[in-house]
Length: 231
Image (cartoon, rainbow, N blue to C red; front, side, top):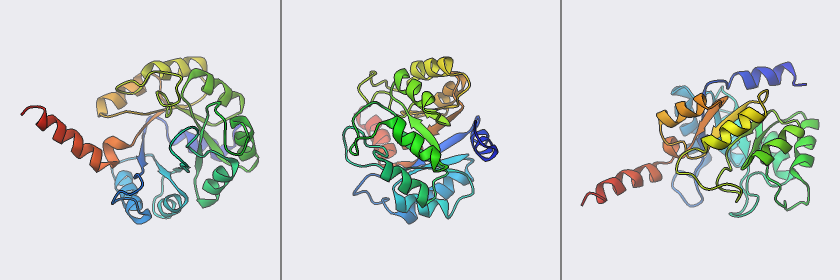
């Protein structure tokens, strides 16, 4: 049974926009101070929570904003990348993450633990866990493990489902129907306000948007491509 504090935290996300503030390695914006400023700007625009990557960014953002921080730690570029081990999860929690995001797939992890083992260990530590899912089976095991939040972050990336051009609303609907009592965050390829609204209509508790808001390189490239294609 969730605590009162956890219930209040999850309720604060309902119907709202979560903004993912992340920069890729080697990019000009890849500094904790820059990400904290991006997070502050997103909060000023009405974000109900911020999702961020890496201990330095989690700490910097947590120290600046008043809304909840969803923390994760990306390691590598294939397999289980999002908070792959219990050590990474505990470090995110210690850095100040109000919610710790974990890869919820059944793929092998570097420390040999399963998602369920890591999630339960984090629960014992008092952490709130978000399960980043790529399939309905992922969501099923995450609910069995007692997570507070599900998300569609890995839809199209874990090999279980095709990579859709926009958000995987079909998977979102399936998860919401299968687990009506568990909040589900729509995340992944939400590129417009209209797609965000469609995700809420499909049953999402809240919607997470990253690249379309906080990644100027991709946004610029999209505009440039639209112009180049006309020449």
